[in-house]
Length: 94
Image (tube, rainbow, N blue to C red; front, side):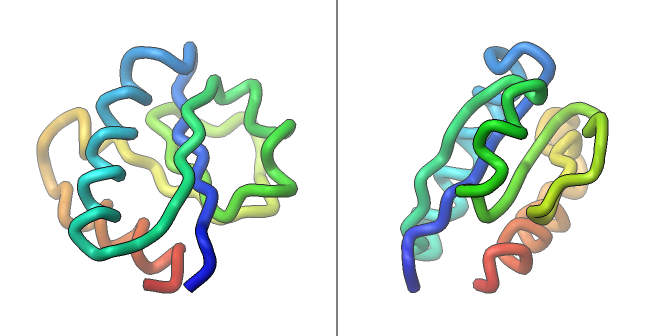
């Protein structure tokens, strides 16, 4: 499988996206999935949209994107995280 590019976005691109980024790194490593994660602000997503395969976000997206979007608030709450894991894997075709 070719390397995937995943955008991990929150409002400021620092706090909650860091938590989510680590969770995704661990998930992908455990499955042997090669991916490049780009941590950013939700406002920066349009500049990456044409080269990314997936957006994982902790905020409400301000518009629709050309790529699949997974809302990862569950990771912050620590509840139903397996559902979010599966949404990410499904979006990547894994």
